[in-house]
Image (cartoon, rainbow, N blue to C red; front, side):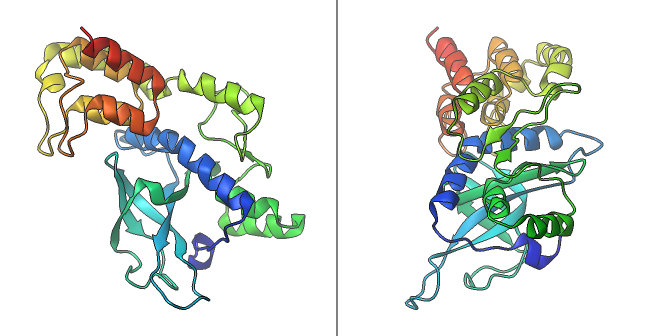
Length: 275
């Protein structure tokens, strides 16, 4: 991607606000995918990035209050998103291209990852594409070199081979969207299912893996809860992981499940902590 393609500033239209709300509501699927991408020996994603709203302090009424820009090399701790800014700002000049940045999760405006040329996420990008004439949209997609799908519809996770894609409206406002999201809430990542036996064997052989925090004060449980990996969370709990132990940021696994928005995992943790 070239600089002019990855960079954009949008107005506060209703379409943009709705797209941002949808991106924030589904960010957990982006982070779950990245949690598994970090474990892959052969990487499966062509790219992954988030769009953040960088605050701008200016008395000039012509200058926007935020500049929306893409950030790559993402890390997430349940509070803030850290990564590398992908282009030189026009207005948010306290930030520099290709330098590390950290912003609160609340300033997320979009997310996107690409697998085999196909885009997942990209809610604000879809809003922009939908407003374009068809010839301009085709030119836009060709410049990115990616398959964004039909305008107005967004995918957040890949469908299993032979299965119809999980299509959502950009605003997540249809009854079909609510049904699809309810199914996705209960659908494990394929790598979690494939590694279930291996994870169980590993935790059984070394139960301290479930009980001991790492150098940053995080249990494996904290990280798997934030990523929404139900199968792994269940195994860790059964081998002694404490759902009420805080991480280095003072967050319990229960708190992280609520922040990320994984109700099924939250129910599992609440049942365990009540014992």
